Image 1 (cartoon, rainbow, N blue to C red):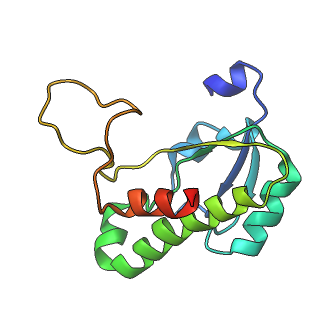
Image 2 (cartoon, rainbow, N blue to C red; image 1 turned 45 degrees about the vertical axis):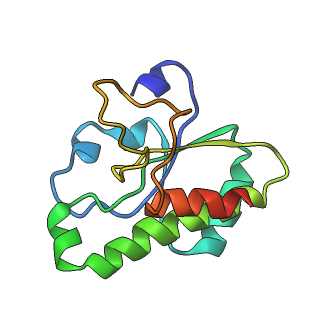
Length: 140
């Protein structure tokens, strides 16, 4: 809502909501953005969509939204979260224009230094996390 208020043109790419009611529907978010029902696992469709936008920034917040679904079907959750991230990063590599991406995750990303402060982008990455491995693969 804040981005819309600031005049940002927002494109959303998401699965159909799994529950009813949802905050998305109750807050009428679809009226604030270009809402697209799609699965990030379908890499060619995602790549075509991203190329059509010519965005400068992508905020990536894709994840299994319901913990109970993650517990009942962990393979689907891994496929969606990991391959969805891979598909997004691969799609960005195909762009002619530069596009920044902000990946929001609950995965532990930074090396735990047992400090009483927030980690910053310059902090060392935790070795072996799924997101760390994906980022390193995409940077090669």
